[in-house]
Structure formats: structure tokens, C-alpha cells
Length: 312
Image 1 (cartoon, rainbow, N blue to C red):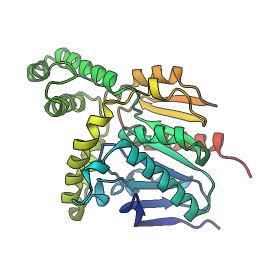
Image 2 (spheres, rainbow, N blue to C red; image 1 turned 180 degrees about the horizontal axis):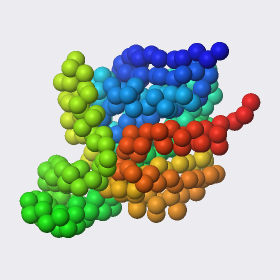
Image 3 (spheres, rainbow, N blue to C red; image 1 turned 90 degrees about the vertical axis):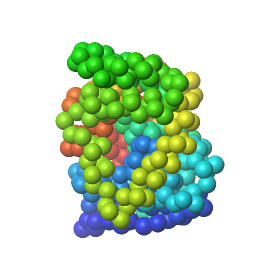
């Protein structure tokens, strides 16, 4: 008889209280942590709406990371907002969940910013992870920004969008002289031209469904997280720092992703060594294939489970 799991609570991670949400149709199913993007774009408030199919095969864990969502407080030290701290806390969360649910390993997925944490954690903690799944994977941030900008500029010219052309020419190619303004303008047009979402505006859905009691905290956390973490992201180049993984790895990318460009991930996939690896392209998605094509994503995850979960 299967027993469903559904709980959310604050737990102690990294010496502060952090929020987790865990859902699944059968408590015996393997744990799957999905590390949210952003930085600061926690998704626990929409998890129940967009991951129902996943819950058939996994205990799905959504965690509001340090400085994000229900975990954000104004007392969060800005010096604690660094990638090493987040990786340490990811490993701490893994140990906590494995202990509570009496499992030896779990599945780790990371989306966008979360894929930075996920890949680093997978490289450091392979003994606790069945497989790593990178969604909208970051591979080389500086190169990604260049490809992203070029997409926006080419689209603006193709569409004869004079305002977009002018805006993009004013900020110039990356690295931007004014990074905050440059990234904001570039992202505006990436989103407008379909490089973030294709047929389903995930980001609008995410922001429009924030509960009233969370809204102020959420947006403060988003600003706080971006301010301190985004500059650190710009130094990420996994072509140089992670060339080998000791566990199976899957990259799930949207064909139209120009936020973390798929073409760069294809190149990274080619050089990455792992016991097994697979690059899966979702033909109707951009940056959020897990939410833009949720049924297909659940089927892919079911296959990953079949390929990597040890039979007792």
C-alpha cells in the first residue's frame, strides 16, 4: 500500500532556518531535489501546480535557498551569499533528507543558477547521488552572455524593432560597462523574443502566483540574491573546472534557450567525461523545459530513474 508524502517546514541548514517542500505519491520512491534558478527565484509556491506528474515516481524536494523565498530574512549576512556556502548547504540538505527518509542516495537536479550548485555538488558528493540532471545548464557564463546578446540583437534587426536595436546598441556587447542595466535590458529582449519561454510564460506564471503573504519577502529576496550572487556567476566556466563526473549525467535543454544557450551546453557535453551521459533537447521549450513541457519532462525523468536506480 503506497503512502503519499506531503509536507513543508523550516529546517536548520547552514546555521539558519530554511524552507523545504516535499511531495510524492509513495514514500518509498527516491528523493529528487530540484535546485531553483535565479539566483533567488524559488519555486516552492508553484511546485504543486507544475510537478504533479513528477510526484508519481519521486519524492520531489523544493528548497527556498539562503536569501530566497520563505528562507529570506533581512538578517541574512551578505558575506554568506557565496557559491561555496550554497554548495555546502546543498550537501547538508542531501544528508538531512537521506537520514529522514532512510535512503542511501538521491537524484539531484539543478535549473539555471541551480545548475551551478548542482554540478559542483555532484562533482564533490557523488557517493550520495544516483544521477545529476542539469536543466537550462550553465556551462560558461561569459560565453553564454555573448551568445545571448547576439541572439537578442539579431532578432531585433530581423524584426525591425528600432527600440530594441537602439537599446541593445546603447548597452553594447558584454561585458557591459554598467552590468546591472546591461543585463536587465538584454534579458528584457531575450524574454520578448522567445529565448526564455516559448509557448508558456513560466516567469509570468511564477511571479503572478506568489501568495500575498510571501510577496514582499519574495521580491526582497530576489533583489538581495541577484545583487550578491550574479557577479560570482560570471566567473563560472565548467569547461575548465569540471571536466569529469563520477556519476551519470543528463542535460535537459530547450531548443530555443538563449538564457543559458543550448549550443554552449552541446560543446560542454562533448568534452565532459562521465560513466554515462545524455543530452536531451526539448523541441518546444526555451529556458524552462521542465515547466514548459512538464509531461515530457516527467517521462524523461521516469526513464532516468529506470536507467540509474539500483534494483534491490
